[in-house]
Image (cartoon, rainbow, N blue to C red; front, side):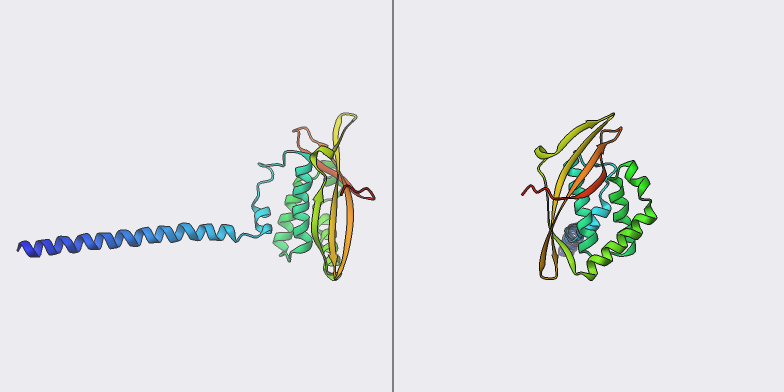
Length: 192
């Protein structure tokens, strides 16, 4: 009878160890699967999930950098309508109220879609974007507003051809101290 009891206790212990091992393996696989899906997240998915309102860029250069990250997705990625609208919503968070008034969402989306289509037809992609250093940002006070301007250089591929374009961005600080893009223009200036 003692032998039977020892055998039963030993069997129960082995079963508990096996069950504990299965449970541990289940949680380990579940934990690592979550890490893999986060690592495989595309730039578009990261930008769509990013809370721009809560984590607004801290200075004028960072605003232009964020803007350029989204622009690169517009012109280099194949986007669904939902992704295009989501990224357009994100980029508009960076816009000054005057720029938003001049570009209502519907007309902004229409012109953006046409521009993206033009890029695709010409087989044009943005290869490299460089932005002036923060030390080179031009800060001014115009009336009651603080403004900033800086250059961004775009190197693009159009088929086998290389194209370079410089754009000067003008930003204005809002009531909350956040820099918002007011407008931009092509520039002959160079900083590289």
